[in-house]
Length: 463
Image 1: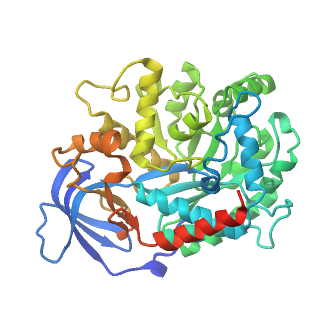
Image 2: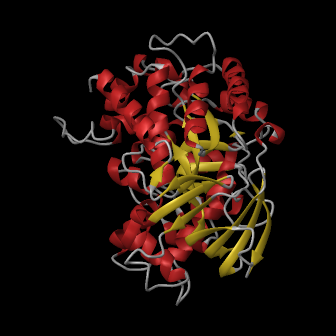
Image 3: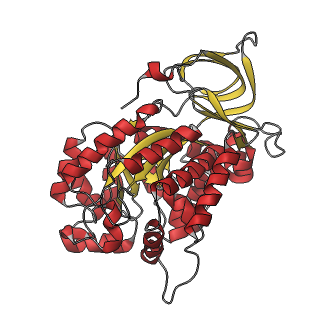
């Protein structure tokens, strides 16, 4: 769902990019004609007259295809060892205690800060997998979509492209196990959830090019019947679901159904290009091949998966099967677009004791393979017209500082290798979303206001 363009129409913009990564490769002096946030024309070797020059190295902006924005506020709170060995499941208890404190204005402030950091760190769009719906006692707000509206307000304040994914969450475990008290703020039956989703669609009308999908939380949080009802009723937009993040989840799914999570979904749900399976860490070879063949996206969150000790995604086998992938910032414990890609490659190197694992051909740039793959998978997973500097797509792009010492001597794909493996987010100079510059000199235009609000919010929560 996109909001009316007439509501957000801006004067046409003509830019001249020093260097740009285009679908056909690298080019110099690239003219972009932009109307209402969309690229209407791309001209290689454009004359400078009548254009605003944008100095640096322009890359299509990456999507963070999986985010829980509120978790940015709890970053660092779960790094103290407990009385027994820690895992995702012990981290989840810290998350429950944190989420129990949050009021709507707290969520908006934390999400605004997280979205600002995403933009400064090379992401231009986010898929917000949003499951914090109700008041602290579990009762719905007067506006059922109050918390969705707060996410939309944070996106409006920062300018990030938003795909809002209201999450359906009804149970506490496989086979419809009763939810726990700590999950009360997440819960809906299918009927109320679909009303909430309609409220979310209304909430994002203030945003240009917003998309609303649906996110059944996980097979732990739904039953086959409720999953079918929600997916069938939400016939348009992306479908995201957590799957096979931890081995305990796999074991419990086997005990319940005789199938592993990805195996069960592929056999029992209409998994196709609309779908994104978040994590998909623990798959057999058969599951890998079948998921790739479905053309769904694997939503990999390397920094969060490392932070939680989830495991390592089998990238070589998935890529050999022509699988599609994107990356997400998930728990937002560290927000960095190039850092997610670096961690994805480094996890493979550690697991396989090898180097340059993601490229499939001799002479192929690791940075280029990672970046181009994540562009395509991220745009597909979020249902957004992004992922390339091309006519008809949104003018969402990141500009690297060509004078950065680690970029100054490079060219072409070497820039991507250096950006991902050497400079990281420090090389980001400017970020444009819908043709509008929201980051300049590495700083978001509203950084001071958003930072002060975030600081005050955390102080008020007395963490």
